[in-house]
Structure formats: C-alpha cells, structure tokens
Length: 451
Ligand SMILES: [Zn+2]
Image (cartoon, rainbow, N blue to C red; front, side, top):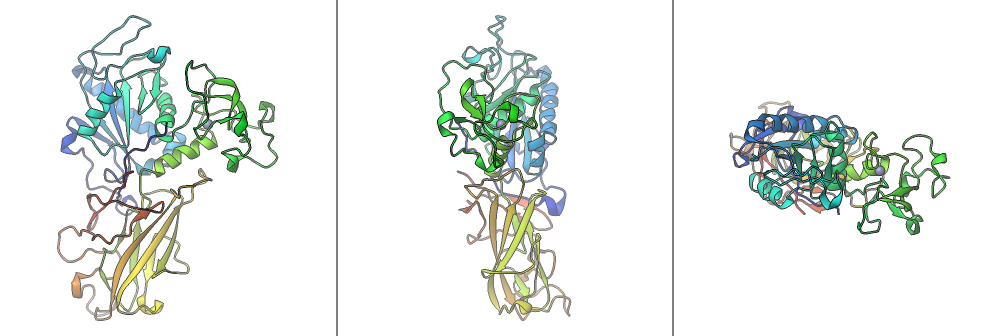
C-alpha cells in the first residue's frame, strides 16, 4: 500500500551552502545527523533505527546507518534527489545481538523483535513496526520514512510501513528495493510465488491482462511497441518500456514495464516507470520553493533594480517563471528576479511577486497531482520615498525595508516571521504553517506540509 507520510518545509541550500543546524534535536536522544540538506520537515527525512545492536555494538549501528546515508547519495534514482534528503540515525539498544530465525531455531531478545521467516518466507524479515513507530515518533516525529537495519548477516528485508534490511553484503541494494515499496508504493516485479497475496494491480508498476489498454504507464511506451511485449522485442535491460509478462509473484496474467528492474532483481536499476514513482514519492514530501527574499512586506525603492530571489533546493532540473501582480515578467527564467518598479510601471504600495518553480526532471512524464510544480507569492511594498538603489543614502528607509540585491533582512537581529498571508504552495495545495527558524543571512520561518 502506498504510504503518505509527513512533510515539508524548507531551507536554502543553494544560497548558503552551509546549514544552521547540523545536529539532532534534543528530543532525539542518542542520535546522529548523517546527512542534512535542509531543516527537518523541509526535506525528505529518513530516520534509521537498528534492531539487534547491543550497547557494545552502538558504534557498529552508526557505521551501518552511515552506509545507508552514503548509499542514498550514490544510488541512481535516489542520488538524483539527494539534495532534498536528510538522514538521521537513532540508536536503540537491544539486550541481545542478531535476529530471530525459525530456520535455525534462533531466538534473541531485541528491541523490535526482528524475525526471519515472516509469513513463512525465509528471507522476509518482520519487525515490530508499532514499536518502531512509537520509538521514532517520540524521538523524531518529523520523520518521513523509518528504516530499520536488522543486525544479522543473513539475506533479507521487507518493505511495509518500515523499510527493513539486514547487514547482508547486499543490504543496501535490498533497502533500495524495499524503499520502492515503502516510499513509492511499488509492487514486486519478480515471479516467485507469494501464497495468499491478494491479487490485483493497484501499484503503478504492474498491470493485469485486462488492464493493458490503456496501459497506466503509456507515457513511457514508444509508438509501435507491441503490447504485450515479448522479451525478444527488448533492446536493452529497460527498453523499450512495454508490458512484459510476469510480475507480482505470478508468471502469467500480470505485466511489468521493462525486462529488468530493481523491483525484480537486485542487480539492476529501477525501470523508468518505477523510477518515476520513486521521484513522485519524494516530491510529495518536500518543497520546491523554500522561501523568497526579501521578507514578506519588505519595502523596496521605486527606482533602480531590487533583487528578488527564490530560495530552492539544489536540484539540477528546476525551471523558473516570475510574475508581478499576475503579469508575467518576460525573460525572468532563473531563481533571481531583477525588479525595477519604475520600469514595470509599478506605483507605490503592495505588489504580489510570484515565482513558479517546475522540476523538469526527465525522470517524470506523468504528474497528475502537480507535484513537480510549486508557486510562492511574496508581497513587496514599493516606496518612492526610499533612496533609489545605487543612489544616495544606500539601503534603508521606512519600515526597515530590504533594499537592493540580496534580500537583506529588516533592521534588527531578530528572526523575521512571515505573516499569515504567505502564499507558499506546492502542487496546487496550500501549505500548512509550522515553525522552523532557519538562519541564512536572515532567519526565516519556514513551513511544512502534512497530509
Ligand atoms: Zn520497475
């Protein structure tokens, strides 16, 4: 089942290059910040816990968790979105090491009671997900995805509400696969029987025979591709995207998009359809626009250019468009808008400056929920009594306005909290308000969204 977890607010990685808080919140207890690209809640927050790590194995847990964080920054689809990931590790002591394993008669006392042989399948590891959530929600409630590393070397994992892996040499590949379930709602594409598993094709990467026309991933299918698609038609491990028979624990009657895929075999990347689902999964959990500077309600001079800047995650494929009072600004296609009120015919008073940011990644072709586009509106006040930018007097003026380039904060050292009129939105949905104070040159209160 696809999970909807928790969510987003924001930071300014592309502007600052360093972050205000690169340490765990006090409530997290014995915790390490393994990767932080923005404030908690403003990014996809992975929280890693371990089971079967004794007090003497605490350092081993953090080393294993660090390997997970490193992998998220290097594994194909995940690496593309590493600029929006935070990874936190919470140490949870177990009385004994390892995991239960009915196949060997092993029973140990661990924090989350991990066991192989879950539902009768030897490699399937079950954990006490309720216990994991109690622990994680208490210590790190902003988590988006909980990952549990089971301190046992036997191959195994599972992809339910908690993504579970072991310490087997393939554990990172297993975890990438399991997160495909936990994060993107993907189905397994392998054919190994899973007795009793409910039939159907609700996941984005499988289709029953009766659902091949139209095919749910049709945007990826080249014209002329036969449907169903015989393996003989394949030109590579992933091409052409079509409908190859065999998936979701059955060899017949269920179809998958590509010959190979991480959801079918560990030695391969995600197929294009699964990769798209993973990216959309990330996109539900973070913002495309963290903030806009200057601050809400700041005054700017009527004459001369003032710089308005969209603060965004350091993603590579972002496109920008700006408008002022609903009128598009020609040629404004970067994260910065040079705003000259006089040139635009803007009189004194409040004006709405809106930036639309679109993640143009080629990994996504179908975005029914508008997750790849976000808008943010900032109200600025044109004030002809302020000295012109570059003119006499420099910055300053009534109201302690930001003046000129750079989005300097209002006078004073206190954080500038935005008012209730913020127009921050993502995917067409209003963004909820929750406080996160983040220090750049100024401090901004950021927001995160929950569903
Ligand atoms: Zn796939």
